[in-house]
Amino acid sequence: MMQFFWLYMDELIGKGVDTLLLIELLLHMSAILVPLALPLAVLLSSIMTFGNLGENFELVAIKSSGISLLRFMQPLVIFVGGISILAFLFANYVMPVANLKGLSLLYDIRNSKPTLTIRPDQFNSDIQGYSIRVGSKDKDGSTIRDVVIYDHSDMLGNNRVVMAKEGQMIPSADKQSMIFRLKDGWQYIEGYENGAHDYTQIRMHFDEWDKVFDLSGFRFTRTNEDMFKNANQMMDVVQLKESIDSLKQQQKRSLSVVTRYLAPYYTFETQGKEKDKAEKGLKRVESGRFQSYAGTFLDRVPDSLHKIVLQSAANNIRLMKTQMDATALDYKLQSENYVKYEIELHRKFSLSFACLLLFLIGAPLGAIIRKGGLGMPMVVAVVFFVIFHILNITGEKLVKAESVAPWLGMWMSTFCMLPLAILLINAARNDSRIFTKEWYFRLWRAITFSKRIIATASEMED
Image: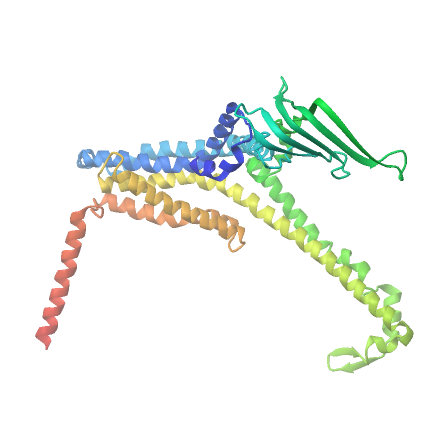
């Protein structure tokens, strides 16, 4: 959530969005983060739980009563499996709705105009068609002095200018307009009237004049959510599969119609009688297995038509290149969309399975560490989750770069962490002490002792 705030802070502040909308946005964004936060919660809770059991020697009592660690973990594995299923259901049914609501609301906030702010000695162009400058503002915030207003709402330049010595900014009761009550000023108007040749210049003095500005453009409006429904983040598994199948069919059609697109631009690949006639008209020379035409094509074209033929060929090549570039760009966009849909499809399964995987890592880790609370378990949980998250992001980037298949990239973190889970479970079953200081001291003593034996043996040989 802090990352979200830092990322969009400058786009949320100063937009005049009310508190309820911000709370709604935060709720939707919180729901989006659940599938990523849930595996970390499972990892931390499993390390803390088994660490407490190990610290209080309850695991020792359980094992001494003939119950193995795997048997003791079976009910929890079933429970975490249920959490994984719920996580998948949440990602499949709740997250698309949360994404649709949250991202569409964020889009509307980002594209809404900021509140009207008039600063002294600065031109303000927030109101469309007007440029406003005030020389100074009094402490009350509404009294302004040395006012200059350039009115170019008719798209004819700065042909209307209003200047006043002082005035007041008065918002309307419904907040939909702003009234500038100007005093002791002049209005200048110039332009053509009564025909194109009648250029007029008008200057009018006023003692008091109300200039009303429409602020409806500053009102926050919601965009129709149907505009965002085709995005990959707003779809469930069934919709993602349908979209993937549609993209596959579009890619096949794009490749199959390339020849048909290019056929009108080259004339040497003729068919039927015209092709036979063209072949007979050209003199062929046999050279091994291949056939080549004597001379060049231009040798058989009259000199008066050389320029026309070359220009026609160049135009055809340019048109063919344009058509090929458009087809290639369309195919590239389809490929990128295909990858995005595949990533989102596999993400729903991989993050759900991550709950079970990180439990299989956290439970034996807690049994080995034998420390409860929020000290060592928190550190270890964060380290392992960061490794998992980095592998997950790396796999996703490899998929987007089309370096690996979507299924391989999105499950890469699982494939890398699963052997570690198996090793930790075996270590916990054998009461490994790899996370205790004594184990490392014994290992260091064994290494130094081995060095001494080797040194002694080499001296005896000498």
